[in-house]
Length: 80
Image: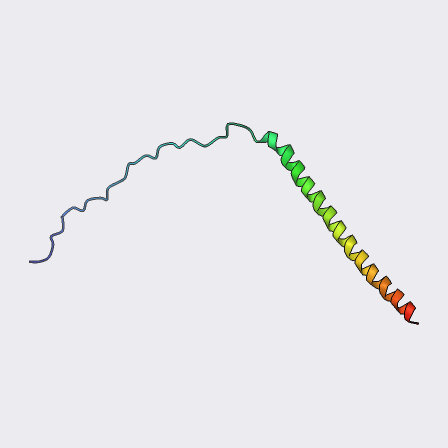
């Protein structure tokens, strides 16, 4: 009495026939080739400057260590 009546023939599920519109690919108006050389120059310049900064830092540390050693040697010689 309270049961729903099912249809005799099952209906197939609806098929979606939506077609996706063709999305055009985004292309740049200009080529990137003119920017390759400046970017390479900036990268190489950065690597060179970093290497020079590291060389200066290592030199400064070694000079500071040499100064401490020489000062301790000279102070030791004056006390004798």
